[in-house]
Length: 401
Image (cartoon, one colour):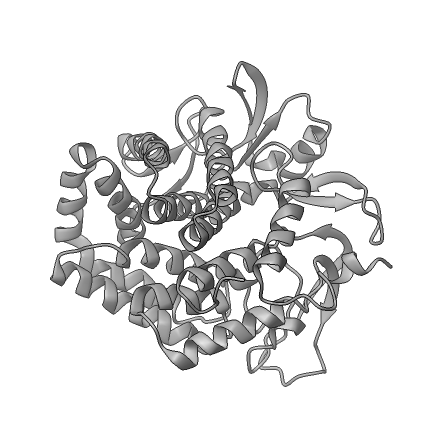
């Protein structure tokens, strides 16, 4: 079996060279049409791509990839990082353009793509629609969820915060305005072309505010009043959904990733002191729930919000180093009988990073999960390394190399 199918390399380290190698692989194999997908290979030891999968989460991971490239640019100011920002912004643009209504698609690809039939087979239950991208017929997957929007807005916020380039700001403002106008125009309902409502932001004051806060900054004439009215009336209510989610620190663990990126959006720019206090109270609930989970991404979100803290920052680097020991493919993992269990699929303590299940983005999976089936055909994109790595570089935990 090829070493590349099992791990990055035996001598991979926390260096720019390692990150750039993962990035090059992502660009070569995980973005066939501009947004992030994961390839399925012909066999576990093959390097030949058969088709693609995980289309339903293309928008959220393209947004996270935009955030990674934005932190990379903030840390290095390199032309290559800026090109990566433009690449990811273009990927998000296609996911908006293709719908024709400024709703966000889960994923999209040319109708003539050799991968289209398998994508439709796998994700067609979400609804398959047609659209035009640059005068070309495309198809796109609907039933768009809140997590897709939150991932896109996380990336857009990072690009606005970290990339002080006017053209980038212009593109972020344009895309953000389109998405928000569509959401607000439908009273925070996500409406598909056939009239179906795929999800709603109603009842999630924290998430509405995370989106509107970027809108307020990129287009104050359009969104500042809406943000202020909402923040002044419901900011304290942001605590309630976080407190409810914190009651279960294992189930639907992806909810904590959505909370983390929303809080980064809310707490890394200026704010009225009493509104900020409400956000911080909600964030503290999230942090108390997850701060012992061995989550490098959440540690670096905390670094961005709270500033330096030696123990946490050192731990984040150890966790990132352990990521490099993980397989890149989805081989089965089963720790049942190997560690103390407090449920059928729940360890009593977080598993070491290099022993956790294979997945698309490690930091949104429960560290208590004991097993997951896989056959080694699917390769993860590595955004779960790239994003926290470039955050660590930007925040000074890792020096340039």
